[in-house]
Length: 212
Image 1 (cartoon, rainbow, N blue to C red):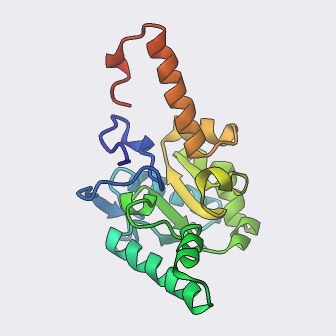
Image 2: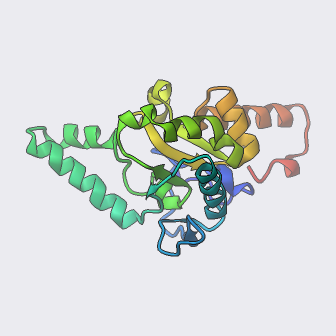
């Protein structure tokens, strides 16, 4: 199924193994740090919010170094294939190696990085959760519209291993609700769809929710 990229609230685009970006999806990019034109890029609508969060963290003595922002589908494919090859070199068969790779690197077109909506911050190691940078993000990220996209207790739902470094932009209201209620984006999406179905079943006008 293709991701609903025509949704009125672009911040809520759900991209994962079940919702794939269309082949013709294009991303308008901007530097994630406004004063550094060479900084990693994000969707131009997300970049100002990352910059705002970055500057706020600096005031607290925290540097949220961008590690991986927007990735082209072509680069995602290279990364995915390289991970498969790594596992095959360790003696795994192609099918098993592909399945193992997919728990770490999403296949091309199924990653939020391909949409420019997410940033990997500071590190790509689980130990990042023990840093002052992670502690700051855990406390403040939602204030700037970002969520921890792949929590440790949601791996069965997201189908992705815990990534304490991966932050996704969804906007302040949604981020606050998601983080306060300990949800992942898939759960929030399901709640939203259920609420819309209930609204329509009660006779609510479809025109008010057609953008979802």
